[in-house]
Image (cartoon, rainbow, N blue to C red; front, top):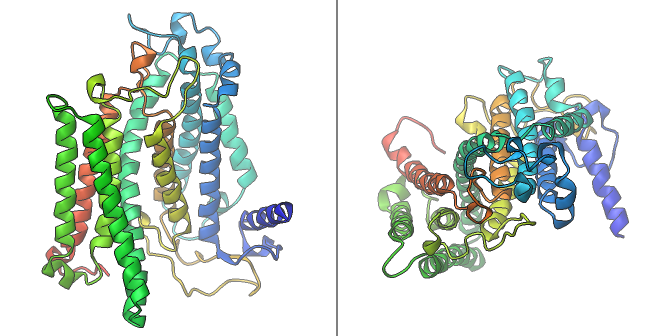
Length: 441
């Protein structure tokens, strides 16, 4: 039975890989727009890269990776993480450095695609074939770039990739929050709409339960952070991060249910605020986990030894959130990120071209459903974020393996992004009251 389901899923995926409706002949594939199937395939490519990156951290590959070109002469100065007076053998972090090279390959691919797709207005553009097809070739190109990257001598490559990854990770954290806010608004619209239509207590209880569970989880998280990452007479910076973010979360939660906000946005409420609050507490946890002060970070590198690079609990949660956001942005009928550009949302009722029985059909003949260039730039940021998450936002120029994950830069990146995220959500609440001439529905 499992084999049959596997073949069915493979058949569905194969159908959705085609670039035009006429080339799809598989009855097993569900009907979908060309714009949606393309985003799904790019998401598959990104998930494939993330899986390869995770495999680079497995115990069984560490001895093999130590023989790769960039670490083959690890006792020489050129193979050190950074040529300074305090360096350590790159073989101790070869898994992380391999992840960097896979991330480099994906980032280069999506960046080049974003440049190629600048100015595309419809699928009648000759570049549409590149955007919506040649999937096998695209996978081979990414693999080829990754193989080539393994021949880049390390030198300062790891340090440069860390800083590029920090910037890209920061950008994608903000994008993640935009997607989560968009998801929470849609979630609230559906459940509140069902409650208003049916007056069923079940929907009301579901709304209250979902909101309450998320606030309780956030409160438990705050208590744990104070318990494990602060001390009564020390760790003032961690105390500030946790306390200040808690205050900001309370502020936006209260703001979301004020009469003026409710008048402007009747369906705005605590459900959306609870999602933002829980995500903010996660970012706070991720930030203090990178605090270089060992007295205030009890689990600092407790998961890593000399021969094993893996990812910690914050990274696992981060990967789950990342995967959800990637899939949501790919399946969403109108990308929340693309809606910030000048492109129109996808038209739900556009007529299918060609055979009415087509499974993948072109819905962008008149105008693209989203900015193709911005989409690929978003995936560049997503690639850099998952690269940093898989490597625990580590610092390649550390003087020892023990301090590799004590990265003050990543700590501040996460804290500042949490502040910007809350400000962005707060602005989404008050914007309809300030910009009264604009439609925010």
